[in-house]
Length: 301
Image 1 (tube, rainbow, N blue to C red):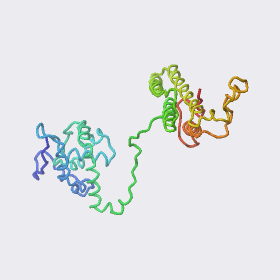
Image 2: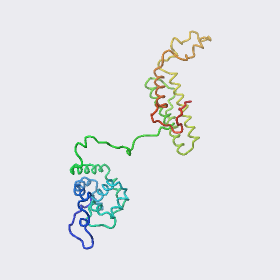
Image 3: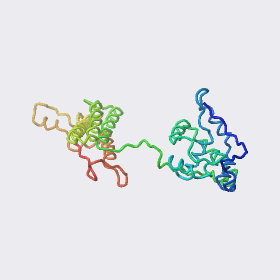
Image 4: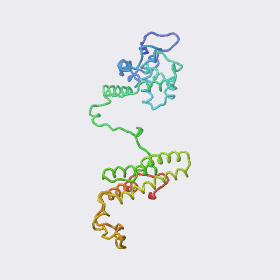
């Protein structure tokens, strides 16, 4: 349920001290609290509440704690502990009298962050508005913004041997379909299972079984590479230059053997070799690391 708005009574209390009587009203937090539009923030967060249930925590209290946490670089526990003995923190969160104990649970900050979700951008928008209104931020300062994405999640995976071999098998299959080469077997399902089991065995420290799955990937990749070099659309070895006239003679059997270096190169074999070389033998400074291999080259069986 939506919490009730905090209203300042303006009256004194015989047994409690008013915060505006014991703090410096020219302090930076006091001036910032007077410039933030708390009513606008409360109206933007209102749709996140339901119509029924127990009234929630005051919006200014939680939003103020989140702002103080970011301003002073504190943790959830740290900002709650400092709130108890810092009257400026209490004034910033809307308290009128000095409090000697924290009125809520520390875990409420985590629940509030989950509830806000994308609404946390409101804090950034309001902070920019206040900075622009106070003269601390000029319009020309916003023409260029530098964003640090160090802690942003990225879709980066560690390039282990199993993943590289699996990627090579999938890449050669795509290349074969593109150039019209019919493979005897694609080994896609076998490679997928072997790569998955290799990762599981490595995590369980069962390295013999892990090496067995790597050998499976090595051998399947070698078979596909040999298929690429012997089966191509050009059918180099069926060219009339190498076709025997008499298959029963010994000379004919010698002609059946493919030449060591044919005069014309197969474009598919050339492309496959270049792709594999770029995958497994990167240039210096490429940053590709293979677990357990170091600087050694990846050998294909």
